[in-house]
Amino acid sequence: MSSIVRHVSTIFRCPSLVPNSLSCELQQWRGIRVKVFNGNLESALVVMQRKMQSSGIERLIKREQTHHIKNSEKRVLARKNLERRIRSQDLARKLKAILIKKVRGL
Image 1 (spheres, one colour):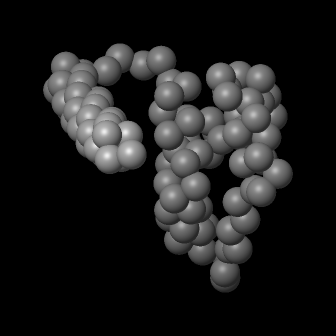
Image 2: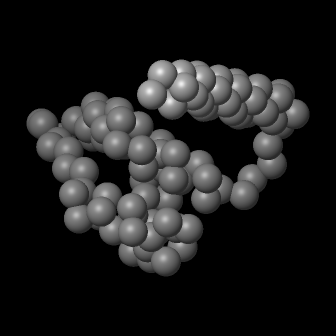
């Protein structure tokens, strides 16, 4: 958990480290605020992590990390990328068919 906090702080200090610095600047401008009630830091960190996941900061952090990726993780990522590509190609094919029908209908 503390490693995530450390990476977030470095990203906000040095937005040039992130490839897409414009989105990082927008994230920095919007910010994530978490209140700590009764000194309960653990629950505040859980809430912060949930907010980071929903805002996409966690994906930026994971993309920045250059640690070793296990083969099983590589397979999962490759499968997800393939599924995304196939969905995109199917959508493009459907849109193309719709456009052709509209052009022929004229």
